[in-house]
Length: 107
Length: 254
Image (cartoon, rainbow over all chains, first blue to last red; front, side, top):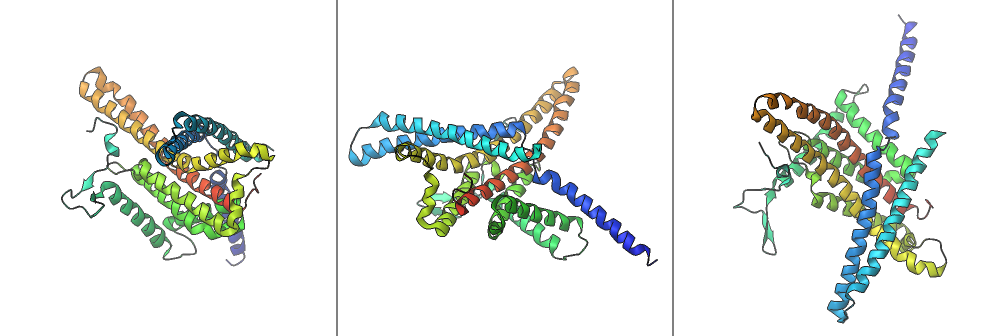
């Protein structure tokens, strides 16, 4: 039946489009779960503090080792504070990214 | 039955008498972790090559799976990095498929989850950050370091530049810890509930009947772990995209 062929093709095309929309939808806007967001913010904060503390201890060690200056607590304290600030800044930036991603969907 | 839920994460060498080679007197073994890495890489390569080798117009199930993953990563790159990010497609696709396959392989009983090792995930994220620095330096030269200099008066920069540097250095750590901790926590949870089933079942009487409850819970957690396995691969890949995008287009995101 030649006349029905374009109809069949058109219907197939519509079904393919519908299926494509359905499969592309949830993947693209993979909704971050609340626990995922919490975990992400937590790691951002904690890892910055760890890096800051590690750098501070490294600086103290380097001064002791190469310059024979005993700066022991100073580097640690300063870098710990800077690391904490960086952690909070990370959290702020990440939460801004998350809300920027969520915002277009609310419109 | 293993009663220690952490036993599944132990790295055990095969052929203890025959180390592969040694570095500085320290013998390097072929471990179960290395074995499953080989398995994962082989499985991913075979899956992607075999399913698309026929190249049918109307795809088979396998072929459409491979095509979906290809298009998924392609559109992810397009939406985060724009069109010129597509030349990094092979890199991001490889990372995505490796993490995805190792996460899913870990869910098969009696296998070893290679992404539950911080050494593996940290090496992966160091690779990502290394590529990011390389791309940034190659494209922008020393202007790449303006990534660490926010727009602020000079007296604030004394404080802000170290903060930005620390915040940059946290990236490999947060990237690797996120993947590692998710996999570790999920698999530990499964093992703990599995040991509940065995303990309650062996206790006899009413307790044996109660052992159905943790079993049902295991099924639910397993379904959740399937979601986590896919989601963590996605998160790892999309953060790679975001970092590469920052190196490509400095300060565009501000």
